[in-house]
Amino acid sequence: MIQKTIDLYKEFGVARRQAKRGYLKVYAHETMTELKQGRLRPAMLVIPGGGYEFLSQREDEPVAMEFYGAGYQAFALDYDLKPVCYPAQIEQAAMAMMYIRRHAEEFGILPDKVAAVGFSAGGHLCGCISVLWDDPAVRALFGDECERVRPDASVFSYAVVSSDPKIAHMGSILNFCGDAVEYAAYSIDRSVRPTCSPAFIWANTPDDCVPVMNSVALYEAYVRAGVPAELHIFSEGWHGMSLCNAETEHTLPVSAVCDYVRPWLDLCKTFLSNRGFAIV
Image (tube, rainbow, N blue to C red):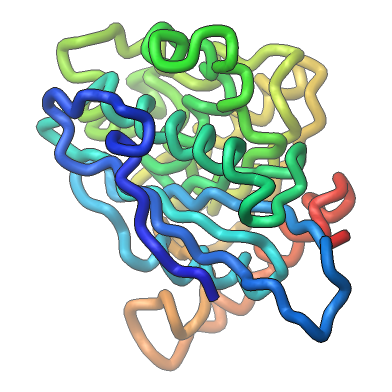
């Protein structure tokens, strides 16, 4: 395995200003001499959650390793947290996507098969690059090339989506926006448009942290825009289930509820493989 950490600010020659993080962890397959040479792989950018207050370890490396095991070149974003707010996080996610795009040949990545998966607040950040790839902060970094920031498919896991007080996880929205931008402008469901890429969305009805209606609102937005989308809502479960296995669960043995919810992962992989996310 090729494993290294990229300082995105150094890579792109961007001043850090208030930013303290902004690192991309790489988990890439090396070329095996006994296998067909020149094979290409899809890539997955993992964006962990934590309310923009911390980064969930359970939604970070374990998820990257899951997609690595499925044949992806995997990357995980270490992004800034409260009190650092906009534009740092969206800049960091944009730089992460652009790094993967620009280094696709180096890592043997299919250039049009780079996906992103975000969990909770990480789902909000995934949404930012999925529907707001031409945000002023991103355009300031990459000009018209900002379109390359948009993932070729997006996976939203119990994501923070809306700024509507009736359903919002306001802590995440406030921590992301600070006093720099209007909350409504970063309500992801309001900005889905026909040029967005396909989306896989999943959540749990009993989620008492990020209301499940965030995922419903996002799905409805994709449908209205005419963009392929798939929604799975499980009748059981809780917030932050990640991979739903012994690697990521707080208590052991793993609850039967985890067995019930765990199929989200296979459903997601099938959704992606049906769209060409496979080794060639």
